[in-house]
Length: 501
Image 1 (cartoon, helix red, strand yellow):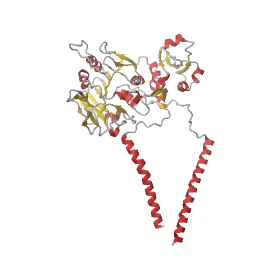
Image 2: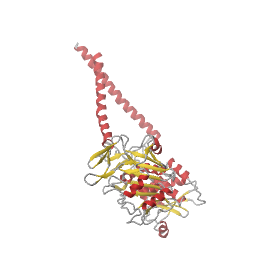
Image 3: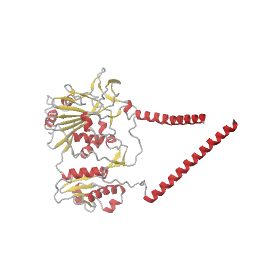
Image 4: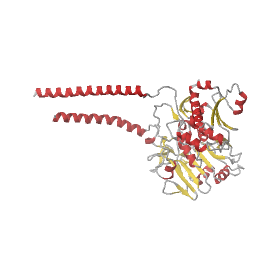
Protein backbone atom coordinates (compact mmCIF):
# COMPACT_ATOMS: atom_id res chain seq x y z
CA UNK A 1 0.00 0.00 0.00
CA UNK A 2 2.76 2.51 0.81
CA UNK A 3 4.25 1.85 -2.57
CA UNK A 4 0.96 2.72 -4.31
CA UNK A 5 0.70 5.96 -2.34
CA UNK A 6 4.26 6.81 -3.19
CA UNK A 7 3.56 6.27 -6.88
CA UNK A 8 0.52 8.54 -6.73
CA UNK A 9 2.52 11.28 -5.03
CA UNK A 10 5.23 10.92 -7.65
CA UNK A 11 2.68 11.08 -10.44
CA UNK A 12 0.91 14.19 -9.08
CA UNK A 13 4.22 15.82 -8.30
CA UNK A 14 5.48 15.20 -11.83
CA UNK A 15 2.30 16.61 -13.34
CA UNK A 16 2.56 19.74 -11.15
CA UNK A 17 6.16 20.30 -12.17
CA UNK A 18 5.33 19.82 -15.86
CA UNK A 19 2.36 22.20 -15.66
CA UNK A 20 4.50 24.83 -13.95
CA UNK A 21 7.22 24.49 -16.55
CA UNK A 22 4.65 24.65 -19.37
CA UNK A 23 3.01 27.81 -17.99
CA UNK A 24 6.35 29.56 -17.51
CA UNK A 25 7.50 28.49 -20.98
CA UNK A 26 4.24 29.73 -22.53
CA UNK A 27 4.57 33.11 -20.77
CA UNK A 28 8.16 33.50 -21.96
CA UNK A 29 7.26 32.46 -25.50
CA UNK A 30 4.24 34.82 -25.62
CA UNK A 31 6.36 37.68 -24.32
CA UNK A 32 9.03 37.00 -26.92
CA UNK A 33 6.50 36.85 -29.78
CA UNK A 34 4.69 40.05 -28.72
CA UNK A 35 8.01 41.87 -28.25
CA UNK A 36 9.17 40.82 -31.71
CA UNK A 37 5.88 41.93 -33.29
CA UNK A 38 5.98 45.25 -31.39
CA UNK A 39 9.49 45.92 -32.63
CA UNK A 40 8.50 44.93 -36.17
CA UNK A 41 5.23 46.93 -36.43
CA UNK A 42 5.78 49.70 -33.89
CA UNK A 43 3.23 48.65 -31.29
CA UNK A 44 4.03 51.19 -28.60
CA UNK A 45 2.01 53.38 -26.23
CA UNK A 46 3.23 56.96 -26.02
CA UNK A 47 4.07 57.54 -22.34
CA UNK A 48 5.92 60.83 -22.76
CA UNK A 49 4.58 64.13 -21.41
CA UNK A 50 3.79 65.57 -24.88
CA UNK A 51 0.01 65.34 -25.02
CA UNK A 52 -1.55 65.09 -28.46
CA UNK A 53 -5.29 65.60 -28.81
CA UNK A 54 -6.43 65.70 -32.44
CA UNK A 55 -9.60 67.58 -33.33
CA UNK A 56 -12.55 65.21 -33.16
CA UNK A 57 -15.28 64.59 -35.70
CA UNK A 58 -17.75 66.01 -33.17
CA UNK A 59 -15.98 69.38 -33.38
CA UNK A 60 -15.89 69.32 -37.18
CA UNK A 61 -19.61 68.48 -37.31
CA UNK A 62 -20.39 71.42 -35.01
CA UNK A 63 -18.27 73.78 -37.10
CA UNK A 64 -19.75 72.53 -40.37
CA UNK A 65 -23.28 73.10 -39.04
CA UNK A 66 -23.00 76.35 -37.11
CA UNK A 67 -19.88 78.14 -38.36
CA UNK A 68 -18.91 77.24 -41.90
CA UNK A 69 -22.43 77.76 -43.23
CA UNK A 70 -22.31 81.42 -42.19
CA UNK A 71 -21.57 83.79 -45.06
CA UNK A 72 -18.42 85.73 -44.16
CA UNK A 73 -17.66 86.81 -47.70
CA UNK A 74 -13.95 86.87 -48.44
CA UNK A 75 -13.06 87.25 -44.78
CA UNK A 76 -11.37 84.32 -43.13
CA UNK A 77 -11.61 83.36 -39.50
CA UNK A 78 -8.21 84.29 -38.08
CA UNK A 79 -6.66 82.46 -35.14
CA UNK A 80 -4.04 84.96 -33.98
CA UNK A 81 -1.38 83.87 -31.49
CA UNK A 82 0.06 86.82 -29.60
CA UNK A 83 3.75 86.00 -29.89
CA UNK A 84 6.27 84.83 -32.48
CA UNK A 85 5.82 81.27 -33.67
CA UNK A 86 9.15 80.08 -32.29
CA UNK A 87 8.20 81.39 -28.85
CA UNK A 88 4.86 79.60 -29.01
CA UNK A 89 6.49 76.31 -30.01
CA UNK A 90 9.06 76.66 -27.22
CA UNK A 91 6.28 76.16 -24.66
CA UNK A 92 4.69 72.70 -24.57
CA UNK A 93 1.35 74.00 -23.26
CA UNK A 94 0.98 76.64 -25.98
CA UNK A 95 2.13 74.07 -28.55
CA UNK A 96 -0.97 71.99 -27.75
CA UNK A 97 -3.22 74.96 -28.53
CA UNK A 98 -1.25 75.77 -31.68
CA UNK A 99 -1.59 72.15 -32.82
CA UNK A 100 -5.37 72.38 -32.62
CA UNK A 101 -5.37 75.68 -34.51
CA UNK A 102 -3.18 74.27 -37.29
CA UNK A 103 -5.46 71.24 -37.63
CA UNK A 104 -8.44 73.54 -38.05
CA UNK A 105 -6.54 75.55 -40.65
CA UNK A 106 -5.63 72.38 -42.54
CA UNK A 107 -9.22 71.11 -42.44
CA UNK A 108 -10.68 74.45 -43.55
CA UNK A 109 -7.91 76.01 -45.71
CA UNK A 110 -10.31 78.46 -47.37
CA UNK A 111 -11.96 79.63 -44.16
CA UNK A 112 -9.41 79.47 -41.33
CA UNK A 113 -6.02 81.16 -41.08
CA UNK A 114 -3.44 80.88 -38.30
CA UNK A 115 -1.18 83.90 -37.79
CA UNK A 116 1.18 85.32 -35.18
CA UNK A 117 1.26 88.78 -33.62
CA UNK A 118 4.13 89.88 -31.41
CA UNK A 119 2.28 91.99 -28.85
CA UNK A 120 5.53 93.53 -27.63
CA UNK A 121 6.28 94.91 -31.08
CA UNK A 122 2.66 95.89 -31.79
CA UNK A 123 1.27 97.17 -28.47
CA UNK A 124 -1.31 99.47 -30.08
CA UNK A 125 -2.86 96.63 -32.08
CA UNK A 126 -2.74 94.37 -29.05
CA UNK A 127 -4.63 96.98 -27.00
CA UNK A 128 -7.28 97.28 -29.70
CA UNK A 129 -8.02 93.57 -29.24
CA UNK A 130 -7.91 93.80 -25.47
CA UNK A 131 -4.98 91.39 -25.29
CA UNK A 132 -3.43 91.23 -21.83
CA UNK A 133 -0.70 88.59 -22.28
CA UNK A 134 1.48 87.07 -24.99
CA UNK A 135 -0.19 83.72 -24.26
CA UNK A 136 -3.61 85.00 -25.41
CA UNK A 137 -5.21 83.86 -28.65
CA UNK A 138 -7.46 86.18 -30.66
CA UNK A 139 -10.22 84.62 -32.76
CA UNK A 140 -11.26 87.20 -35.35
CA UNK A 141 -13.55 87.52 -38.36
CA UNK A 142 -13.91 90.92 -39.99
CA UNK A 143 -14.52 93.38 -37.12
CA UNK A 144 -15.74 90.80 -34.61
CA UNK A 145 -13.25 89.12 -32.29
CA UNK A 146 -12.95 87.12 -29.08
CA UNK A 147 -9.86 86.91 -26.86
CA UNK A 148 -9.09 83.54 -25.29
CA UNK A 149 -6.58 83.32 -22.47
CA UNK A 150 -4.32 80.30 -22.23
CA UNK A 151 -6.29 79.03 -19.24
CA UNK A 152 -9.48 79.04 -21.31
CA UNK A 153 -8.13 76.07 -23.25
CA UNK A 154 -7.75 73.89 -20.16
CA UNK A 155 -9.67 72.64 -17.14
CA UNK A 156 -8.21 72.83 -13.65
CA UNK A 157 -8.65 71.15 -10.31
CA UNK A 158 -10.48 73.11 -7.63
CA UNK A 159 -7.44 72.57 -5.37
CA UNK A 160 -4.80 73.58 -7.91
CA UNK A 161 -5.54 76.46 -10.26
CA UNK A 162 -2.08 76.21 -11.84
CA UNK A 163 -1.96 72.57 -12.99
CA UNK A 164 -4.34 71.65 -15.85
CA UNK A 165 -6.27 68.39 -15.60
CA UNK A 166 -7.85 68.30 -19.06
CA UNK A 167 -7.56 69.92 -22.49
CA UNK A 168 -10.50 71.95 -23.72
CA UNK A 169 -9.00 73.34 -26.92
CA UNK A 170 -11.42 72.28 -29.63
CA UNK A 171 -14.47 73.46 -27.69
CA UNK A 172 -12.92 76.83 -26.89
CA UNK A 173 -11.99 77.42 -30.53
CA UNK A 174 -15.39 76.19 -31.77
CA UNK A 175 -17.35 78.45 -29.41
CA UNK A 176 -15.17 81.48 -30.21
CA UNK A 177 -15.37 80.86 -33.97
CA UNK A 178 -19.14 80.63 -33.80
CA UNK A 179 -19.27 83.87 -31.81
CA UNK A 180 -17.26 85.87 -34.34
CA UNK A 181 -19.28 84.71 -37.36
CA UNK A 182 -22.47 85.50 -35.43
CA UNK A 183 -21.61 88.81 -33.75
CA UNK A 184 -25.23 89.36 -32.68
CA UNK A 185 -25.10 86.41 -30.30
CA UNK A 186 -27.64 86.49 -27.46
CA UNK A 187 -26.52 87.57 -24.00
CA UNK A 188 -26.79 85.61 -20.77
CA UNK A 189 -27.48 88.10 -17.98
CA UNK A 190 -26.72 87.19 -14.36
CA UNK A 191 -28.91 89.03 -11.87
CA UNK A 192 -27.42 91.33 -9.20
CA UNK A 193 -28.67 93.14 -6.10
CA UNK A 194 -30.09 90.10 -4.29
CA UNK A 195 -26.90 89.05 -2.53
CA UNK A 196 -25.95 86.63 -5.30
CA UNK A 197 -22.48 85.21 -4.70
CA UNK A 198 -20.42 83.07 -7.05
CA UNK A 199 -17.73 80.77 -5.60
CA UNK A 200 -16.01 80.77 -9.01
CA UNK A 201 -16.70 81.49 -12.67
CA UNK A 202 -17.68 78.00 -13.82
CA UNK A 203 -21.33 78.87 -14.46
CA UNK A 204 -20.28 81.90 -16.50
CA UNK A 205 -17.91 79.70 -18.51
CA UNK A 206 -20.78 77.28 -19.15
CA UNK A 207 -22.93 80.11 -20.50
CA UNK A 208 -20.04 81.09 -22.79
CA UNK A 209 -19.72 77.49 -23.95
CA UNK A 210 -23.42 77.53 -24.79
CA UNK A 211 -22.79 80.42 -27.17
CA UNK A 212 -23.90 83.36 -25.03
CA UNK A 213 -22.14 86.60 -24.35
CA UNK A 214 -22.08 87.15 -20.57
CA UNK A 215 -23.09 90.27 -18.63
CA UNK A 216 -24.63 91.29 -15.32
CA UNK A 217 -28.02 92.89 -14.76
CA UNK A 218 -29.48 94.86 -11.88
CA UNK A 219 -33.14 94.02 -12.41
CA UNK A 220 -34.20 96.60 -9.81
CA UNK A 221 -32.67 99.50 -11.74
CA UNK A 222 -32.96 98.26 -15.33
CA UNK A 223 -35.43 96.43 -17.53
CA UNK A 224 -34.49 93.06 -19.00
CA UNK A 225 -32.88 93.87 -22.38
CA UNK A 226 -34.30 92.60 -25.66
CA UNK A 227 -31.07 90.72 -26.43
CA UNK A 228 -31.37 88.66 -23.24
CA UNK A 229 -31.26 85.06 -24.40
CA UNK A 230 -30.88 83.67 -20.89
CA UNK A 231 -31.45 85.13 -17.42
CA UNK A 232 -29.70 83.47 -14.45
CA UNK A 233 -30.17 83.91 -10.70
CA UNK A 234 -27.56 82.08 -8.63
CA UNK A 235 -27.74 81.65 -4.87
CA UNK A 236 -29.79 84.76 -3.97
CA UNK A 237 -29.81 85.97 -0.36
CA UNK A 238 -32.65 88.49 -0.73
CA UNK A 239 -36.08 88.44 -2.33
CA UNK A 240 -37.07 90.10 -5.60
CA UNK A 241 -39.24 93.20 -5.25
CA UNK A 242 -42.90 93.73 -6.04
CA UNK A 243 -44.80 97.01 -6.31
CA UNK A 244 -45.74 97.91 -2.74
CA UNK A 245 -45.35 100.66 -0.20
CA UNK A 246 -41.62 100.01 0.07
CA UNK A 247 -40.56 99.50 -3.56
CA UNK A 248 -41.82 101.47 -6.51
CA UNK A 249 -40.41 98.88 -8.93
CA UNK A 250 -41.55 95.30 -9.41
CA UNK A 251 -38.81 92.91 -10.47
CA UNK A 252 -41.38 90.13 -10.50
CA UNK A 253 -43.43 91.98 -13.12
CA UNK A 254 -40.28 92.32 -15.21
CA UNK A 255 -39.70 88.58 -14.89
CA UNK A 256 -43.27 87.81 -15.89
CA UNK A 257 -43.14 90.09 -18.94
CA UNK A 258 -39.83 88.54 -19.99
CA UNK A 259 -41.13 84.99 -19.66
CA UNK A 260 -44.40 85.85 -21.44
CA UNK A 261 -42.25 86.81 -24.45
CA UNK A 262 -40.59 83.38 -24.53
CA UNK A 263 -37.78 84.09 -22.07
CA UNK A 264 -35.39 81.55 -20.60
CA UNK A 265 -34.70 81.70 -16.88
CA UNK A 266 -32.46 79.57 -14.64
CA UNK A 267 -32.44 79.77 -10.85
CA UNK A 268 -29.98 77.98 -8.55
CA UNK A 269 -30.61 77.60 -4.82
CA UNK A 270 -29.47 75.20 -2.08
CA UNK A 271 -30.62 73.92 1.30
CA UNK A 272 -28.92 76.95 2.88
CA UNK A 273 -30.72 79.53 0.72
CA UNK A 274 -33.83 79.55 2.88
CA UNK A 275 -32.18 79.31 6.32
CA UNK A 276 -33.09 82.91 7.08
CA UNK A 277 -36.62 82.56 5.74
CA UNK A 278 -38.49 82.27 2.47
CA UNK A 279 -38.54 84.54 -0.56
CA UNK A 280 -42.27 85.13 -0.86
CA UNK A 281 -42.14 87.11 -4.10
CA UNK A 282 -39.66 84.95 -6.04
CA UNK A 283 -41.19 81.73 -4.75
CA UNK A 284 -44.65 82.95 -5.69
CA UNK A 285 -43.43 83.55 -9.24
CA UNK A 286 -41.74 80.14 -9.40
CA UNK A 287 -44.87 78.38 -8.15
CA UNK A 288 -46.69 79.58 -11.26
CA UNK A 289 -44.12 77.50 -13.12
CA UNK A 290 -44.74 74.45 -10.95
CA UNK A 291 -41.77 74.88 -8.61
CA UNK A 292 -41.98 75.01 -4.81
CA UNK A 293 -39.04 74.44 -2.45
CA UNK A 294 -39.53 72.40 0.71
CA UNK A 295 -38.97 74.56 3.77
CA UNK A 296 -41.00 75.68 6.76
CA UNK A 297 -40.70 77.34 10.15
CA UNK A 298 -39.76 74.77 12.77
CA UNK A 299 -41.08 74.38 16.29
CA UNK A 300 -38.33 76.63 17.64
CA UNK A 301 -39.20 79.44 15.22
CA UNK A 302 -36.14 78.79 13.04
CA UNK A 303 -36.62 78.15 9.33
CA UNK A 304 -36.09 74.48 8.48
CA UNK A 305 -35.22 73.62 4.90
CA UNK A 306 -35.23 70.06 3.62
CA UNK A 307 -31.76 68.77 2.76
CA UNK A 308 -31.59 65.57 0.75
CA UNK A 309 -29.50 62.76 2.25
CA UNK A 310 -28.72 59.39 0.67
CA UNK A 311 -26.08 57.21 2.32
CA UNK A 312 -26.28 54.57 -0.43
CA UNK A 313 -25.70 56.96 -3.34
CA UNK A 314 -23.43 59.56 -1.78
CA UNK A 315 -19.92 60.79 -2.48
CA UNK A 316 -19.41 61.91 1.11
CA UNK A 317 -19.60 60.11 4.44
CA UNK A 318 -22.45 62.31 5.71
CA UNK A 319 -24.65 61.44 2.73
CA UNK A 320 -25.32 65.02 1.61
CA UNK A 321 -23.10 65.01 -1.49
CA UNK A 322 -25.29 63.04 -3.87
CA UNK A 323 -25.21 61.24 -7.17
CA UNK A 324 -28.34 62.30 -9.02
CA UNK A 325 -30.52 60.04 -11.14
CA UNK A 326 -31.94 60.77 -14.59
CA UNK A 327 -35.42 59.27 -15.01
CA UNK A 328 -35.42 56.21 -17.26
CA UNK A 329 -38.68 57.00 -19.04
CA UNK A 330 -40.72 59.98 -20.15
CA UNK A 331 -39.70 63.46 -21.30
CA UNK A 332 -36.66 63.68 -19.02
CA UNK A 333 -35.20 60.42 -20.35
CA UNK A 334 -35.68 61.69 -23.90
CA UNK A 335 -34.01 65.04 -23.19
CA UNK A 336 -31.08 63.53 -21.29
CA UNK A 337 -30.64 60.43 -23.44
CA UNK A 338 -26.96 61.20 -24.13
CA UNK A 339 -26.00 61.80 -20.48
CA UNK A 340 -24.79 58.55 -18.94
CA UNK A 341 -22.13 59.73 -16.48
CA UNK A 342 -22.23 60.89 -12.87
CA UNK A 343 -24.10 64.09 -11.97
CA UNK A 344 -23.09 65.46 -8.58
CA UNK A 345 -25.06 67.68 -6.21
CA UNK A 346 -24.18 68.74 -2.67
CA UNK A 347 -26.35 70.33 0.01
CA UNK A 348 -29.40 69.96 -2.24
CA UNK A 349 -32.93 70.73 -1.19
CA UNK A 350 -35.98 69.33 -2.98
CA UNK A 351 -38.72 70.55 -5.30
CA UNK A 352 -42.38 69.69 -4.83
CA UNK A 353 -44.79 70.22 -7.75
CA UNK A 354 -46.78 73.36 -7.03
CA UNK A 355 -50.45 73.31 -6.15
CA UNK A 356 -52.57 72.73 -9.24
CA UNK A 357 -49.91 70.68 -11.06
CA UNK A 358 -50.92 67.06 -11.59
CA UNK A 359 -48.95 64.08 -12.83
CA UNK A 360 -49.40 63.35 -16.52
CA UNK A 361 -48.42 59.68 -16.21
CA UNK A 362 -45.15 60.17 -18.08
CA UNK A 363 -43.02 61.57 -15.31
CA UNK A 364 -44.04 65.23 -15.76
CA UNK A 365 -46.61 67.53 -14.11
CA UNK A 366 -49.05 69.70 -16.00
CA UNK A 367 -51.21 72.73 -15.26
CA UNK A 368 -52.83 74.58 -18.15
CA UNK A 369 -50.09 75.57 -20.59
CA UNK A 370 -47.30 74.70 -18.12
CA UNK A 371 -45.43 71.39 -18.25
CA UNK A 372 -42.95 70.77 -15.40
CA UNK A 373 -40.50 67.88 -15.79
CA UNK A 374 -37.98 66.62 -13.20
CA UNK A 375 -34.77 66.19 -15.23
CA UNK A 376 -32.80 64.87 -12.26
CA UNK A 377 -33.99 63.21 -9.07
CA UNK A 378 -32.48 61.53 -6.05
CA UNK A 379 -32.30 57.73 -5.98
CA UNK A 380 -34.94 55.63 -4.29
CA UNK A 381 -34.30 55.47 -0.56
CA UNK A 382 -33.09 59.05 -0.19
CA UNK A 383 -34.45 61.01 2.77
CA UNK A 384 -35.23 64.67 3.38
CA UNK A 385 -33.74 65.93 6.63
CA UNK A 386 -34.72 69.11 8.46
CA UNK A 387 -34.22 70.20 12.04
CA UNK A 388 -31.87 67.26 12.69
CA UNK A 389 -34.38 64.54 11.74
CA UNK A 390 -35.72 62.75 8.68
CA UNK A 391 -38.99 64.39 7.65
CA UNK A 392 -39.80 62.78 4.29
CA UNK A 393 -39.02 59.83 2.05
CA UNK A 394 -40.30 59.00 -1.44
CA UNK A 395 -40.13 55.91 -3.62
CA UNK A 396 -39.98 58.00 -6.79
CA UNK A 397 -37.01 60.11 -5.70
CA UNK A 398 -37.00 63.80 -4.85
CA UNK A 399 -36.94 66.20 -7.85
CA UNK A 400 -33.60 68.02 -7.78
CA UNK A 401 -33.53 69.78 -11.16
CA UNK A 402 -36.70 70.60 -13.07
CA UNK A 403 -37.51 72.14 -16.44
CA UNK A 404 -40.83 73.89 -17.00
CA UNK A 405 -42.10 74.92 -20.41
CA UNK A 406 -45.01 77.23 -21.18
CA UNK A 407 -46.43 75.81 -24.38
CA UNK A 408 -48.17 79.07 -25.27
CA UNK A 409 -45.34 81.59 -24.81
CA UNK A 410 -42.51 79.05 -25.32
CA UNK A 411 -40.90 80.35 -22.14
CA UNK A 412 -38.62 77.99 -20.20
CA UNK A 413 -37.61 77.85 -16.56
CA UNK A 414 -34.87 75.62 -15.12
CA UNK A 415 -34.77 75.25 -11.34
CA UNK A 416 -31.76 73.63 -9.65
CA UNK A 417 -31.75 72.82 -5.93
CA UNK A 418 -27.96 72.76 -5.48
CA UNK A 419 -25.53 75.63 -6.03
CA UNK A 420 -22.73 73.07 -5.82
CA UNK A 421 -24.05 71.61 -9.08
CA UNK A 422 -22.53 74.56 -10.96
CA UNK A 423 -19.31 74.88 -8.96
CA UNK A 424 -15.79 74.46 -10.30
CA UNK A 425 -15.27 71.09 -8.63
CA UNK A 426 -18.19 69.62 -10.58
CA UNK A 427 -18.30 71.64 -13.82
CA UNK A 428 -14.59 71.38 -14.63
CA UNK A 429 -13.98 67.83 -13.44
CA UNK A 430 -13.80 65.14 -16.10
CA UNK A 431 -15.26 62.75 -13.51
CA UNK A 432 -18.70 64.38 -13.57
CA UNK A 433 -21.24 65.07 -16.32
CA UNK A 434 -22.58 68.28 -14.76
CA UNK A 435 -21.37 70.52 -17.59
CA UNK A 436 -22.81 68.33 -20.40
CA UNK A 437 -26.02 67.98 -18.37
CA UNK A 438 -26.39 71.76 -18.12
CA UNK A 439 -25.59 72.33 -21.79
CA UNK A 440 -28.16 69.67 -22.72
CA UNK A 441 -30.75 71.40 -20.53
CA UNK A 442 -29.98 74.74 -22.20
CA UNK A 443 -30.46 73.00 -25.54
CA UNK A 444 -33.85 71.74 -24.35
CA UNK A 445 -34.76 75.35 -23.54
CA UNK A 446 -34.43 76.18 -27.25
CA UNK A 447 -30.68 76.84 -27.65
CA UNK A 448 -30.00 74.01 -30.08
CA UNK A 449 -26.48 75.10 -31.08
CA UNK A 450 -24.77 74.24 -27.79
CA UNK A 451 -21.62 72.07 -28.13
CA UNK A 452 -22.96 69.36 -25.83
CA UNK A 453 -20.79 66.50 -27.10
CA UNK A 454 -17.48 68.37 -27.08
CA UNK A 455 -16.17 67.34 -23.70
CA UNK A 456 -12.80 68.21 -22.20
CA UNK A 457 -10.14 65.63 -22.94
CA UNK A 458 -8.66 64.60 -19.57
CA UNK A 459 -4.98 64.01 -18.98
CA UNK A 460 -3.88 60.72 -17.42
CA UNK A 461 -5.84 60.26 -14.22
CA UNK A 462 -5.98 57.37 -11.79
CA UNK A 463 -8.04 58.83 -8.94
CA UNK A 464 -11.53 57.38 -8.43
CA UNK A 465 -13.84 60.31 -7.75
CA UNK A 466 -17.28 58.76 -7.99
CA UNK A 467 -17.03 55.80 -5.62
CA UNK A 468 -20.17 55.84 -3.50
CA UNK A 469 -20.56 53.93 -0.25
CA UNK A 470 -22.66 51.31 -2.01
CA UNK A 471 -19.99 50.90 -4.70
CA UNK A 472 -17.26 50.61 -2.08
CA UNK A 473 -19.24 47.97 -0.17
CA UNK A 474 -19.90 45.95 -3.34
CA UNK A 475 -16.24 46.11 -4.39
CA UNK A 476 -15.12 45.01 -0.91
CA UNK A 477 -17.52 42.06 -0.96
CA UNK A 478 -16.42 41.09 -4.46
CA UNK A 479 -12.70 41.28 -3.65
CA UNK A 480 -13.29 39.22 -0.50
CA UNK A 481 -15.73 36.63 -1.79
CA UNK A 482 -14.50 35.92 -5.33
CA UNK A 483 -10.91 34.86 -4.45
CA UNK A 484 -12.23 32.75 -1.58
CA UNK A 485 -14.78 31.08 -3.86
CA UNK A 486 -12.12 30.36 -6.49
CA UNK A 487 -9.82 28.77 -3.90
CA UNK A 488 -12.71 26.76 -2.46
CA UNK A 489 -13.79 25.39 -5.85
CA UNK A 490 -10.21 24.57 -6.81
CA UNK A 491 -9.67 22.78 -3.49
CA UNK A 492 -12.86 20.74 -3.89
CA UNK A 493 -11.86 19.69 -7.40
CA UNK A 494 -8.43 18.57 -6.19
CA UNK A 495 -9.91 16.63 -3.24
CA UNK A 496 -12.49 14.91 -5.41
CA UNK A 497 -9.96 14.00 -8.07
CA UNK A 498 -7.57 12.60 -5.45
CA UNK A 499 -10.34 10.63 -3.77
CA UNK A 500 -11.44 8.90 -6.94
CA UNK A 501 -8.03 8.69 -8.67
